[in-house]
Amino acid sequence: FSYFKTVAGTCVTILKAFFQEDYVIPDPLMPNPGDGGATLIPLSPLVSLTVGGELNKLANNVAIGRNIASVHWRSDA
Image 1: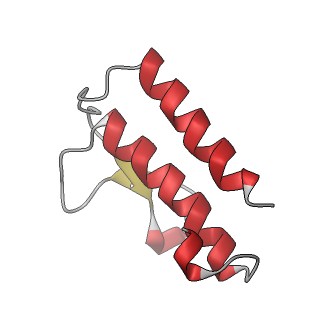
Image 2: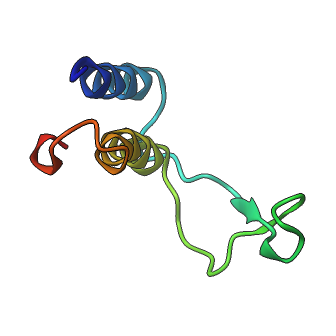
Image 3: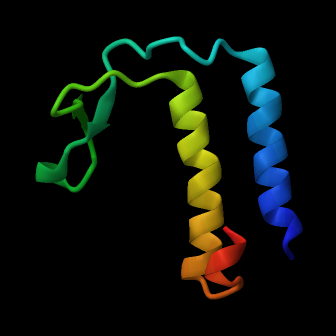
């Protein structure tokens, strides 16, 4: 099952080939904690989010999620 991390890394790498990594995402939004996430509000604090950075976070979250689910050793991520 270690191929899940390989697939996540491969998919992110392919997406990076199609999108401009340093593109800054304009007006990022986040779920509203006041209503359980039913609506979106402006990201606070306002930070600069790039496509490449968000794709890196996605691949990392896949790896960490498998550790949290106890299906891999921590060193594998």
